[in-house]
Image 1 (cartoon, rainbow, N blue to C red):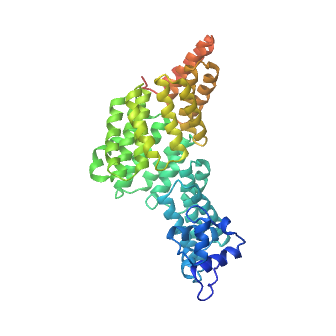
Image 2 (image 1 turned 135 degrees about the vertical axis):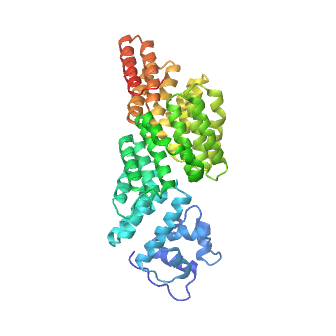
Image 3 (image 1 turned 60 degrees about the horizontal axis):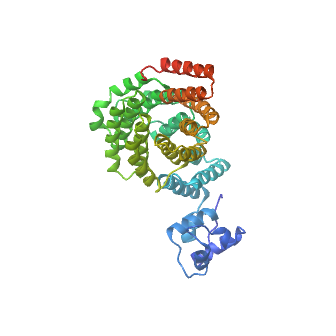
Amino acid sequence: MPYVDAAPAQESVGARIRRLRLERGLTQRELSEPGASYAYLSRIEAGHRAPSVKALRILARKLRVPVEYLETGEAVPGVVSRDLRLGDAELALRLESGDPAIADTFRALLGEAHEASDEAAILRARIGLGLALAAKGEYREAVTHLENATASPAVTPQARPDVYATLGRCYASVGETQRAVSLFEHCLGELGEGDRALRIRFTSYLSCALADRGDLEGAREVLADVADRVEEELDTTGRVHLYWSQARISSMEGETVAAMTYMRRALGLLEASEDTLELARAHLHCAEILLLEGQAEQAGPHIDRADLLFELGADHRDLGALRTQQAHRAVLLGDAEGAIALGREAVDYLDEHVVDQGSAWHVLGLAQAAHGEAGAAIESFEKAVEQLEQGGEWREALGVYRAWARALQSLGREQDALDAMERATLVRVRFAGVP
């Protein structure tokens, strides 16, 4: 859209919407959607209703014009129009990151910016698209766009820490933990001593990436220098990330009490914030820590709280993680049939999430074994260890090997069971510190 022509003089908002709709060959039903219904649109075009701000945004997007043009009828040059629409999309991403339509908006803006050779808009749209895809769980495509964005001299860890943090999370989510480690090491190398808060935040990211890779000693070492300065130099979000990192390392080393101590600190901070999704995820992580120790009753309240909070908005990764922990708890409580149903839901939800899906295959295998479906369980365990090892989840992978060996023994496959236990021993040696 290189240029929007000025509207006819004295044209009302409703008349302008009708004119633009007809110019684009759309019926009222085709233009309408929730928030700008067919009946509502009819009244707007007839001049009987003034459109709400939300309706104007919806109609402007579908008519491919700026909101300001619908309101005023004044012509807007293409570069200004793109800037306005990018601003609207960036705001929507911050407020409604899980909305799948946001990625489509950025994709369209990226194509338009390329056509106009608008380099500034290309960069903004590429960053927005990468962040939106990551929020949807489409990590591999997100990596492509975010890597291209970080190649720009304007996108530095100081200027856009969110881009680097999201790129690292995408690497980890597809099992490329070494790339996540290298990225966060690069970020720390770029940050100066004056960037204390960012240095601490990226240190916590690096610690998690090292833990994912199975290097718990390295993960602890990088945190050691910053843990004592948390209260003075980090904001709430940074402190939550650091406590979460410490909890993750402790859990992976089998130190459940320490892990839960750190998570309670994180929960306390999140309870005082308005970030309901992070609070839900924190409760779910508490449940995961407890369930790994077989503490099904203690995990229940955390799962129930996460389930309630996720009703306010959750993506497929959140829902898959929730189903995984619900299935794990059901197994421990003896409800194998219910656990199988929940485990299958988890696997489906986590189709794009390699590491998380490994945990889902694990609990599905446990449920199948408990239900007497040893053959199906073995297949699930095989998929689980492949994905968990790829993502550096060595402690859980060790548990899978043990369950896999038991399933093989139940079928009389003693040699195969011994092979599985030998592989478990190799994991134990590689991942020192696992009980």
